Image (cartoon, rainbow, N blue to C red):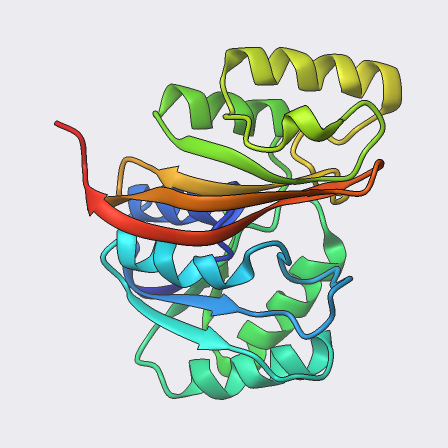
Amino acid sequence: MRAVALLSGGKDSTLAAHLAVEDGYELVYGLTVIPSDSESMMFHVPNAGLGTLVARALGLEPLEVRSGRDDEADIEEMALVLDELDVDALVSGAIASRYQKERLDRLCEELEIEHVHPLWGMDPFEELEILVECGFEVVVIGVSAAGMDESWLGRRIDRNFIEDVRRLYEDYRVHPAGEGGEYETLVLDAPLFERRIVLERVEKQWDGFSGELIVKEARLVPKRR
């Protein structure tokens, strides 16, 4: 089945695309939504435009959507784009947000395509383990949670990261997958990437409680052999 992957550039959407391919879906397009609302509960905000770079790294045709109004308008714009594509399914990284999943369910039902969400209901620590075991290179680009300071910006997801997140979960109930916006990520390399992403120039922004790693310049380079 031909599918379009909803790609934010983060770990959830990229891992969902990976698992969909393992399940036999043929990914053709990578659709990135630039959220109109800076506080969007529907779409990934930090460095949102890098989703198209992840699509290119995966060898997919990149597509981009922005409406300039709100989440509902963004979804309406998505519908217009998807309706023009010859696809059977939309792949998303929804893991625990009913707000996100139910809206995408409804969108796909209206378009008469399948909503594929391989992470839905997955234990968040299992997700982190899969990322490490499969060799994903994932960097933290946003933090906003108790126990997470400026030093978390730029960290890679590895075994030490998982243990630190486990402690934050026990102490502060920080969601291990960052589902509540506690942290945001960018995937630099993954098993299905034809090329990997290199961050050439970044800037840390920190206000004392939360912050972002703003990517000023990034490019695709050949994979390491």
